[in-house]
Length: 462
Image (cartoon, rainbow, N blue to C red; front, side):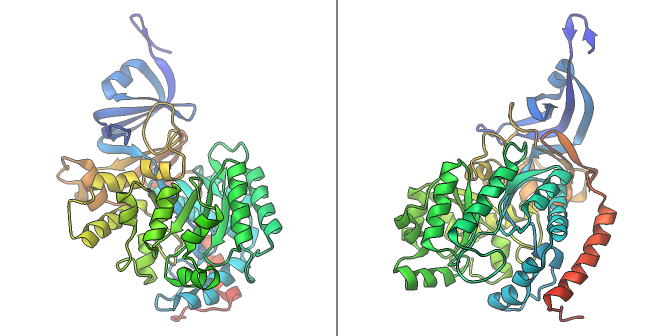
């Protein structure tokens, strides 16, 4: 502790200096020559650099005059296992059914615990180096304890679920009691974890009976946690539900009483006005993964209803999906695409700003997954999830008057230099410091070839 006259500087763990600090708080404050002060994993001050150096004595100082500091980014829908080890391997001209049956499902079925941990580690390392500090896992995990180990080893936060479906055959399909038991086991596994939250996760689509979705919804409510599943990325789910129930999917789930603010639905692209009303009336969150819809040809440019959910005050977040759908785990690129789709689909460039796009990757995403009390903005008391962006490169020259415009429209995850997650430095000078990347790459390459061989599918260029 250092004394200057009568002032005693308070010892803290970390001081993060930015030429600009973008807080994403309610007032959307931006500080010039600002600082974020961190102690015991939490933010203890967001202030000017002059004030921070006067009041605090940090063990470590990061950032500098050529940086922008932003909150940790949130990826609200990511498959951490399966596709990762087939990264950009599934041919991109297969029908969706063929891609699933010939590649994705066999890969998931072949995953051992070692492969689950390896796959999740790779995904989370890429996410971290692109500034993502919180990832909502999409529910296709076979070995949740190994994926939790990946979260711990990389040092980032997120949600964790496990396979849940009860229609047809497939990896870990089961009856209602068996599926709910797997959800319960995952919640117990993550109980008390400082960064990872157990969620109830179903595959969704038309692969869940009414009994399962009602039971899962009630289980999530009882345990005060989230529920997520896939629905209507293409018109197929609507056709299946209309044939079975006479109602469209989200209208039917509302009829069952399964909708609520505990639910975050991935996709909801091909929905009609009645389903939009159901989402808004029940405060359901929706996660948009626009790169996946374009990559898979699912018709986002023909049915872009997410802008109507936004206009109605709905809770939205963004996701990167799997590595043979969204491919790149870069939420800044996703935010840019979403903003462009809103502008283009309306023909009105005034409809959506870069600030709104960044909010969908930070504070609005946190609200969508009901974590805004902990993450999504740089505010005193919240987890110290902080990203330092390098503004020295050519895409930042000359420096923009509004760094958010440059961040969304000119930049991407490659500008991320350093990342702090819950006060722990996980990325330094563009490299993940918590993982031996060289060894990970060697292991992943070997696993890739073994997995391709085990699945019985082979890339066309081999």
